[in-house]
Image (cartoon, rainbow, N blue to C red; front, side, top):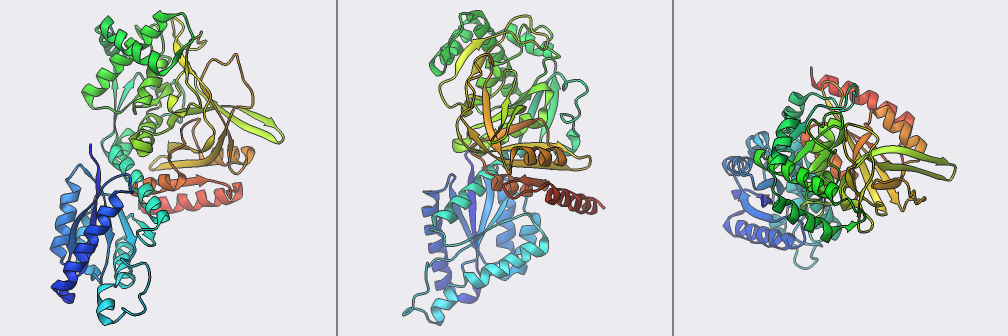
Length: 489
């Protein structure tokens, strides 16, 4: 999909044709220059002067799959009643860019003609009122359109809006059910499809085995060459690597045939399979597919969404699980990993293909997997949970570090981090909010972008950052409960 965003500029006929021609010329110039620095094209669509023009462009945007959102700006004064029908019908993400064409007030040039043409301070307030009155989700970004901070914020919002577009078309393929007796990986699939657009359905593991049996040796040879080019082979068990390639090819064929961008499986249901997909799942994630272990379809879809929001549409985001802590005073860290499946997009160095025994599940043979350390840098971990009647998105700021221990006998990919506001307070806040043990870890996506995404999707957002306290979070969750219950009345 070639996503783009539409630039809709507000005005009215009162100013005459000469002013309107100038408004359109400037709007086209701004869209063209911004397109050069933004992650997605900003396409000028119309200088809207009537209710019908606004309603028509919104209808067009709603049904254009390439349009990922609308950026609105009022160069001159645009009476907001003419925006009601269009904004009430809008189904795409909406950003109000509160800017003006000029950087400064021109001391010698300013006269009433200049004032009539440059009324953004006037027009944007009128435009902002109607969005507030209609209570529609929106992002307001104020500042000059050439300012790098404004451009960065607009670009970040665009990426969040891409997450919405991907979410609305998300299909998740489940192989088997979730891990037995686990609560947090459960969820209301009807509610999720209603709110987020996800289609979550199950395919039999036997169907996957049938597809695996149809994979040819030539197909496996080709994929193994790709493995060898991307990773260091640190095992002599080539049969295990080839088996993972067979699994990957079969899973990808099934997902692509159904239009799925994410999948989940469980080590408790490997009917007819020799190994749990490890390397196979990791390499699929490296290509932008989402994955969730133990049948966790929510984290699977969220992995695909955050990847799509990342750099170049497939950023450094990975399925993750909190495993254990280092609680030494002054050296408090979380160790994140999983049995086999962490995306190599978060690796600090070139990953190694290794084969080791997996002492859990129904594996007949030792699975091959990628082993590596995660890279240093600021990141977030994200968890989507079902609160019964509503969805809650929890996001925590973290700082990833080079693991403080080599852990030579831990044969999995691992990431180590310091959590905000501290390890213990962060854990208390995470547990208080109901966060899952499975998360998506991302170096590319920010907490503000996840807040924007949650706002666009109409779900609750909880942020755990440097200023969060347990007491403050408890109050926030209490008020959120009241607010969201009132919304359902």
